[in-house]
Image 1 (tube, rainbow, N blue to C red):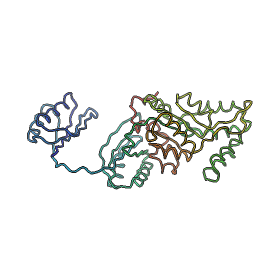
Image 2 (cartoon, rainbow, N blue to C red; image 1 turned 30 degrees about the vertical axis):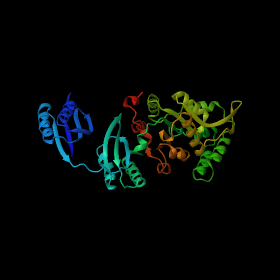
Image 3 (cartoon, rainbow, N blue to C red; image 1 turned 90 degrees about the horizontal axis):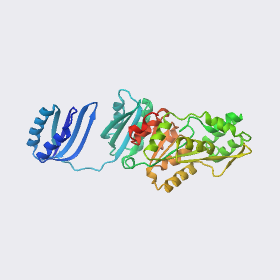
Image 4 (tube, rainbow, N blue to C red; image 1 turned 30 degrees about the horizontal axis):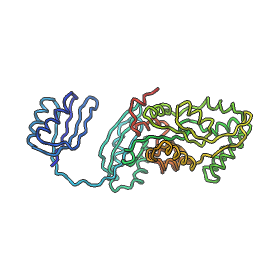
Length: 384
């Protein structure tokens, strides 16, 4: 037989010791325990293998009088443990009434049991984490419905298999344009060269599958021929980082992560970002420069979706990190493969095609929320 014991009341020293002392004296063995203090309120839940139930009840009554807390006891027959399909669901967004109600409503519709719930706050952002047993529910359909509900409510959702989520992540890889920074570098270069309309048309054709990323990149760069290198410095000087990007990178560094930028943008910018933020690795496409001007050519390997995925694997191999311990964050089709392969793939402010294959979706204003998903200590993410 099992005894379920809940204790709550005003927090004071000695409560955990007093409760555990009662159980030990009545020959009841603790098999599960959770205890926390919320807003000055002590709360503890214990499951114990029953010893002398009458003894436990009598001594707990005395403990209630001594400490001024409320204690409830229930007994249950032990059931055969069933195999569980555990997932971790993180919900990120600005605090408001009804978030838990709305998300748990979706879970209820799928017949999903919630095993644990916790909440953390970072500045104006809150993160609610649910550990759930999805049972026979279809994880693809569940993910789709949760993302749909999240979008409707202005919330971001990340869903991970518990076994993968519980593995310590050690390498995080970011796309650059519209992920770590607000700008699309190729568009900024096109404006300076007076070829914005032509570049946007090539981008559109590539996005629609009318030409490959490699071909589109080469054709766009041709249009930049003759652009002086000073223009690149001018563009970099006005680049704005995505809200929370610097704080997140700083927190990741303090937590011991290896950090990489792998981008279809250009090495002139990825290298400067690497230096400014203290990032470990930076990869981009290299613009050929002769006599201080762009030649209109790209030199070396072109970083498309396949190449991005290969680079991530190369970094992981060099650092002796398994792919399930890698996090990939990106916003476009060019990030699809690395996001699919990573242990945790995040679609950041992304189009639907990327959201469908990612483990979760984070919107533009919530990048710092990734710190909660990765369980970085809150002191690591204080605003600089």
